[in-house]
Image (spheres, helix red, strand yellow):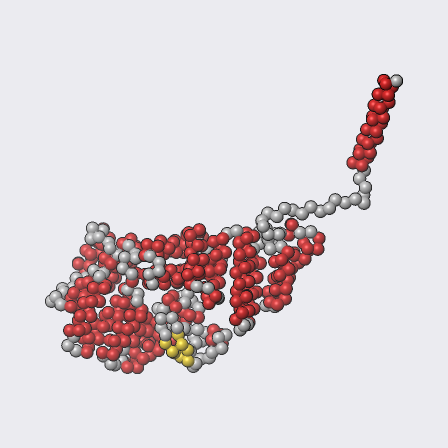
Length: 481
């Protein structure tokens, strides 16, 4: 009986197993057509949601919003653009995993509203929002150095009152610290300006300043060599500004070394070996840069200087000592010598001559425009009716484009107005400089702002205008057209 019971039990289990197997096989081979699998969301490739992470209505809404907000931006309807941009930004800040332009677009939209309001609290809220958008870009796509550069650029040109120069400088510097000679083009000019200011003020050491000055020049060479299309135009603007601005650091003795001066002025000498002015300049600059007398380039220039440009020195006195110091690149000592000549001068003409020499050294060699103007004005005061000091002051103003702006644009253009004032004054009091003054006026008139430029700033030709920067002069608005 027990054996029969076991057999019966096994038979029962086998029947149930076969029944279940058939049921599973039937289900697998012929699924119910009404049953559908739920969609599976893709795992995000970054911390930010992308189109592929969305389904149904959300995905459609995000993709549509990305297209529509750009259409509204094209026609400058920023209110509608913002409405759709917010949808795109909220649903899919990671876009398709590649496109990143919506972050810069968002910053541009909020800048528009920033410019439209006078409410200080609202302005600050817009700036905070823009910076949060940049931070979101960093969260979604990384590249912290690029994002820091964007923030530094925007702070410098648009929102400087909402942060400090030190913060802007650190943001821009971090771009160079990471990318070196491949730094993003838009950081170069503002970083150059702040670097020169900080080195000049002693807030950045000469060694650190030289490191970044070299990096700036390397980045310009790299950018110009590898650029394509319209980006090359941007590098052209940068190349007009940054090197000229860095030249201002030549006034700090010891900042640039022998190689800097030798490369720059020896090459100039090789181009014009028959120009005594350039021969003497090359020799003086290499001496100023600390090049040893044994340097083959110094020896070559000195040989030409002695054979072609030798002038017998006058009896040793303050003027001769000043000339000797200047020829050897000892600019500070040359100034001391010429100022002692001022004290010893027996006539106003002699006094004004040495004062103007000092002004020229501060302008051309030490790049200290404020002191150059001061001594030029002293020269003019010592000799009324002499136009040359005002010619020099006009040149100081006209060459301040890179110092007061970016080399182009409004801040760099308006410096031509006080320059023209000085040249006009020079020829009005001294007929001997009329030809030079007219040539300068005709040359620089083209660099003045246009009628369109002044229209958008709600000013008109003939208005009074205060030029800031180191110039600090009230002048008259004029246009180039």
